[in-house]
Length: 277
Image (tube, rainbow, N blue to C red):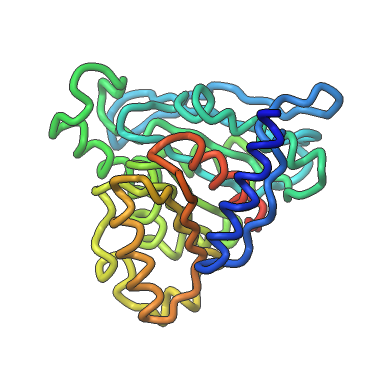
């Protein structure tokens, strides 16, 4: 009964959202439930040397079913929120389950997913007051760590395609703001950008996309999603309004009865990844 009700809810949600974007497919009720009769990808904790921070840092990496070192893969960098770390997506959203199920249905291009710690500081644990200025500033510092340390490490140690058209970035809440800031600010590095329930760290739209013509030329996908009950929705809406006014193609998904939570973020991830690469 729960699955049937959920399936109906999702159909209604995307029917409503189709007014602002038209690429979201219906979502099966079991999209985030472990299926036992399929091939599963693998995830591991990796370490990399961060010259930006001056320490060895951790990240989680997911490799798809059938992963082979003899192939080359595109990469999605998937970022967490202000109260999380590299394990937040695994603990709260289980992207590995969502991705495994999509692969089993042949709805996804094989990709590597990297889930880093977006708090670039020596003590990068989500402890104490996560809103301390130093900790908040560390999320901005992560741009340098990502570009100069983590991405080069991944490209040196994994069989990945290293051009912008095979590199995506997306995240939830604080990570959504980072993804829009870093992705749109580095279009020579990322061609696929997604912000889920992006937080107040998101730059003003005029700063994110100062040159709409260039953005239109370089972006393969710009995705913005948020729940309609989310108190932070204005940060997504103001970006959408600016992009719409300047005729920058983008997907804008507003999920009915969606809060600032993993229900929204899992639905966003499910749809976003199917559009990549």
